[in-house]
Image (cartoon, rainbow, N blue to C red; front, side, top):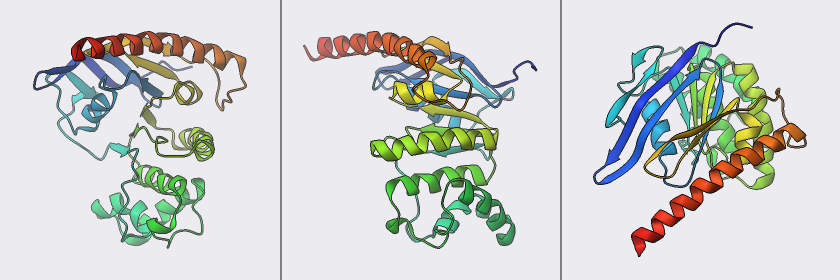
Length: 261
């Protein structure tokens, strides 16, 4: 087995919004083609950290690099999928999915050819000419994921991608995402509130502590893909992550009560 290659490196990252210190010290390395989940108490800076990797936010202190180069803004090497579907209602499924290629001036026929692969793999075949208003929530999120994969970024960033879905749809999407990751062969970073999602999908789980947060645990999920929750080893990891996270949630709630008092 070849040695892992560092893709994203975060060193001593600190983020402050006015008087609020959101992130005190985020230091980690994410390797090429690795799936990493980020979990932590509400308000601990998980999404903020993801947006710094995306280039939407700039750290107050510290440095995040991709392939050794500092992030200085959004770029085509990163695709992001939000909790809300962020589709253009006046564009068809195909037109939404090919948007990134359109911006890159890829010829229309080539863009459609590239999109068709991910339309098929996300189960959207036959809906190429449909508009978002006619789609279910799960199908809208499939469009958003297919769009991120179609223009072939090196890194996929997922911000609570299943948060707006019902439980049954979420379970199907989680299974599909495992297959898509294997097919796409990308570096994926996913922010989630769900321990189950984190251990089911990720190679590693990074746990952010209560605010001002740092990365307090780095847990490797040593279970082969594809995974199911019936796997007893996976249950052990779920209990471990839950134990650490629960302590941080309790700490976060105590701090909030003290502030309100």
